[in-house]
Length: 390
Image 1 (cartoon, rainbow, N blue to C red):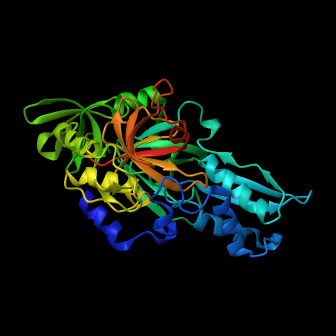
Image 2 (cartoon, rainbow, N blue to C red):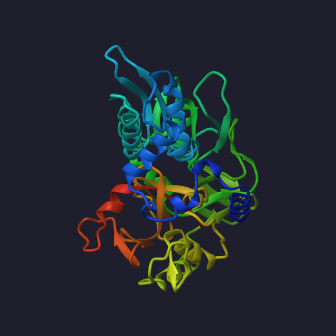
Image 3 (cartoon, rainbow, N blue to C red):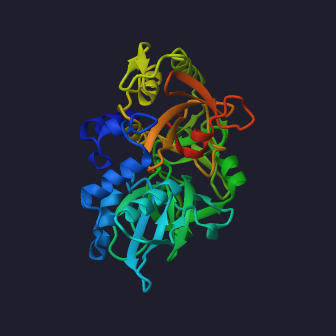
């Protein structure tokens, strides 16, 4: 599916599970602090804040549906039960500490003493190899590692994976587009950050038709491999295992950084430097964070959804909170509020700096503590980056 079709489908169908858009465009939730948001949520399910232990599962499910981001993109698997001491014991895993803190606050407001035994991902048990590549022709990604399960997506040969935890012979991963799912451990080549960067950086080869490359391995259409060289009608590419394969030039295309398009996108965004922040604005008279990104990418003919949480569905995952080395200029950035929801977006400029619309005006900020424009708050709340052009 093309990027434009993907964007169109998002705009048409919407994503109702995220709640109201007017809560999410701004870098700070409108009319609410973190505690207020969580308290309002608690009062919606129990107006008198008198929680009942027999409704614990409902409370957690309600929290996930209202505060948690889309479960297909953000890891959230929490079980709550009352232990022998009368406390509510939380077990399972959550991807970000902001969500963990908001859940604890929510249950505390309902009158429960909480014992937090949750694991924040990626799991420490993975060690340094928290990245991987699909080494099979493809690997189905499921919503759970075993039992009755549903396919979430299909991960293709060479696809970069961000590993979160291991269980029952499967790995919970973010796939190339960011989707969460469990893939077979046997289909994944685990690597550390250095090896991950070496394979993902530089020109790539995108397959436009299936091609067998020996034995039972086929490089499927849509797969991306590392480009090595082109010799006439033959393109040489590298598999994640570092084996070299020869591909018919007619079956693939070499992709390099679209420098001219990225220059235009960034220049378009820079023209709004100093523009006043305006909720819902999309012009030089006033602009909000998602409006700024929308305007910048309109230069390349890409018409993005209106709000930051909707824009997050578009593109390929290039960076996470725990790995930012893959950032490239033009990537869109996504930041969490104190409650764990996507609340802000910006445009990466390179050199640790990014452009974003915040009150009072559009500005450039930095992820680097040594820069005078360092933004500690945004650095701490950064969650993911996506690449819209390749």
